[in-house]
Amino acid sequence: MAKVQREVVVTAITELTPHLRRISFGGDSLQTFPVGQETAYIKFAFPSESEGGRTRMRSYTVRHFSLDDLRLDVDFALHDVGGPATRWAEQCKVGDTITMAGPGPTKRVDLGADWFFLVGDMSALPAIAANIDALPSSAKGHVVVEILSEEDKLDLGEPSGLEVTWVVNPHPESGSGLIDAVRERPWHDGVPAIWSACEFGKMKLLRTYFSTTRQVAPEHRYISSYWKICASDEDHKKAKSEDTPRR
Figure 1 (tube, rainbow, N blue to C red):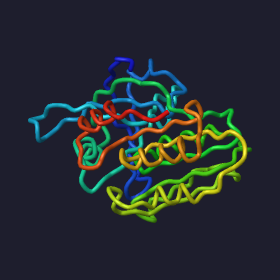
Figure 2 (figure 1 turned 30 degrees about the vertical axis):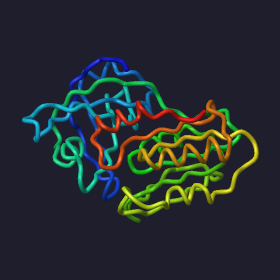
Figure 3 (figure 1 turned 90 degrees about the vertical axis):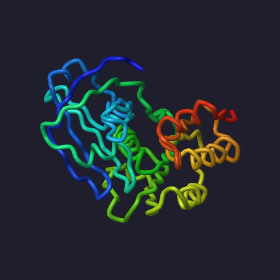
């Protein structure tokens, strides 16, 4: 990941849904932020109250960036029990500053595929939405998203050939609704582009489904986890590094 650090300032806060808050950042440091980085991750240094103000780096997705008005939009999923990132996102106000690093590589779906299958929970919803923005109007396939409540549904502006399925689960640490909904979607002919990100355990089930059951080649699938049940961000990263996916 590029180690460029910038201090940015909160310029606007928008409540997209009860559990999704868009925080817009500005500042002169964004004059050198590269364009076209939607779906890439950036890291914020959030203060941790439990550690005496020590900062913790957490990754979030670039949702929009405009060089013309130096506006960077980042959508934060808000959880009932959150860490330093969630607490900061809930309490921040316009004018607050924070240190940011990045961006890292983009996580885009392959636009050359015959059809598309995008899957995730609310932590991945910003990246899914950014990927949908880039799809051609002729795109077809499926989008399956697990959300915390009916009120968390978003207008994704998806192409007419892309079927969106919302799975409401107020307790994302449990339940198989996301996996079941994915397995129930009809499989199209041609080469698919798979993009999936969610909780670690569910990610492994989806990886098995797409790689083994559906035998999608590695070059046609991006499957990752963004968090892990009952694990800190650091423990989640350790679990990811120790996880050896089956090709």
